[in-house]
Image 1 (cartoon, rainbow, N blue to C red):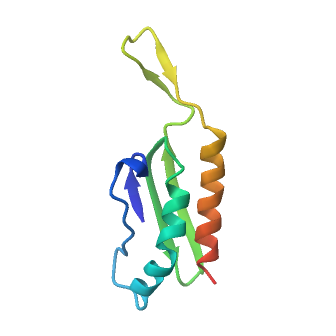
Image 2 (tube, helix red, strand yellow):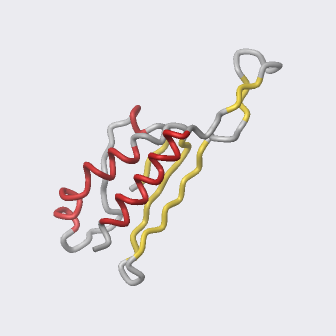
Length: 103
């Protein structure tokens, strides 16, 4: 699973990078909870979730804009991008949703 920018501004989809036995059935079962959780994380530049079948674990890479300074309409007035409580909660929900798929 990978996306760039807020999930709410994209056509969300989950796909496997390479064919996986039973992968389509897995996607059908877990698509909704994973996308719902990921949808709450807004200040995302990139995010990738990778499954290791040998380790039976997920690796989640996320690069957010949270904590950064962006220039607004005037360079002299930078805008901070906070890590909101709702985004932190959504991130925890995403980790929970992914961990529940490992069973």
